[in-house]
Every structure is written in C-alpha cells, then in structure tokens.
Image 1: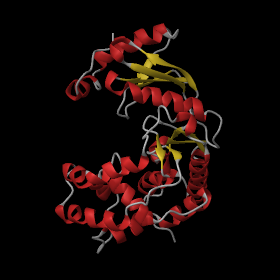
Image 2: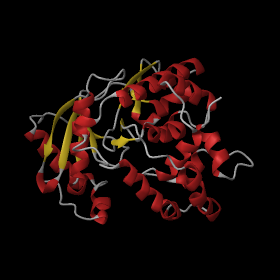
Image 3: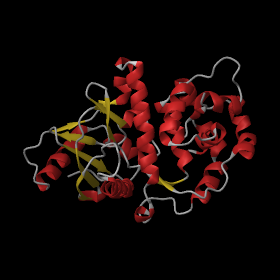
Image 4: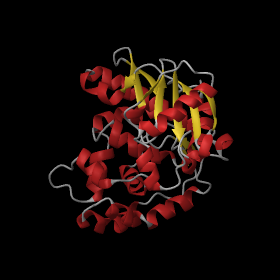
Length: 308
C-alpha cells in the first residue's frame, strides 16, 4: 500500500504526504503484529519515521534507498549493548510492497541534545561533551569487518579521491561564493588527508541532533541514526563533531578530544569537511560565521576544529 517511488521528484512528492503514506504504515504495523499501534510521525528527518507508542520506532526507506535500511539494521544489531551510550535495539527489519524497506527498533528515552543544550549549565555541558567523546572513541574502537558487506566504501582512498574530484562542483551547486571556491583546490593539495591506514565504523553525522539526553539533560542517554554509517578514517567523524557538537568552541573541542583519547589536526578535519559526502559549506558558514578577518581555509580550520 505504500506508493511506488522511482524518481527524486516522486520521492519529494511522497515523503511529506501522509495521505499517501499512512495507509501503508498502518498495514505494515498490522503485518508486524502491531495493529493497536497509533503511528505518530516525527517532524524531523529525511525519511518517514514514526513513533509507535513509547517503546517502538518504525523507519521507512523507499526502493531506491532500501540498502540504507539494510545498513541501518545491520549496524544496530552490531552495536547493541557494546557502547557506553545506548543505541536502539533492532526489533525487526525487512521489505514491504513496491520495494520499500523498514526498520523497527526500540524507542530510546530522552530528548535530542540540540534543543536541550541552551538550558544545560556549563558544568553539565562539559560532562555531556566528555561522554560524547568517550562514546565516539568506543564506536571507533569496534572492529568494522563484520559489517564490510553492507557498509562501505569498499575502497576508502578511492572514495576520498572521488570526493576531491567533485569538491568544487559540489560547493558551487550549494551556492558557495567564488572567494571560497577558488581556494578549495589549493587547500586540498596542501591539506588533503594522507592514505589512511586506520579504518573504523563511522557514524558520519555525530551531532547534537542525534545524541539524546535524559535526566533533564544531566546524562547522555542515546545515539541515533546509523543509516549513513561508513567504514573509513576516524578523522572523518570529527567534521560533524566540530560543526554540530562543539560548534567552533575550542574549549569544548579540547574536552572532547581528551575524552576521545587524541586530537585530530584541524586542517585534516577541514579537508574532510570539503570532502564529506554531505558537505554544504554555505550552510556551515551560516551556522558558524567566521570571525572578522578569517577569509582562508587554514584559519577557518583552526576556528572550527582547533583546541586550546
């Protein structure tokens, strides 16, 4: 009963239309033995995701992105109970009509760190950043090999090379000014990451929006959204850390790095910011405007990703 989605235009039309999605969601709940559930859609996220009461969450993937559902299910099963922060327990996964895939997972308590952050006192923020650094270190310490058949890329260095070849084009498409676009090639020539010898399971979007807090913001209670997980250089995850967790605060980045167990060269992280699969530099510059006089990538790297 979920509609066939074969093009990006169809996806844009369907993804926000509950009159098209809800009959299929209710039918899938019935097939999963959850006929009494009253699905309530979460307002954020690029996929249709529904709360099924207080204990379950149902996430849907159209046929073109069905592999993302397989990836998230496998990663959730791999991680359950293995990190110092809770991840959703996988309850079921599979395929539905018209190529749709689904993941049914346990619902974690708490709220996203992003809306909670303003009301958390400084000492509490420090504890949460410490806990986040510890959680990312634990994720990166796990052997990613059992996930290699569903989590890519198969060749990290080839992925980086491909991203580098399209970096300027990608940022121009997002509307980045020529002042910054004209610097990308030279900066990457000087600062592009060396071929990585270390491989880790990457979250890729390790940000306040995907970290849950409980006890009125006093405890880091969960880590969500493993759909875009990858296997690659651990430094890649520091892009989201600097932009969306520590948010260009060198004191917080210093705490995060201490809890993680090492610092990462800000220029390397800046390079990965330009090479990131979801890189959108104009958005980042709006979120974290450079201080007066910062007009090149080297000082911007220090501003966004540096430590004390």
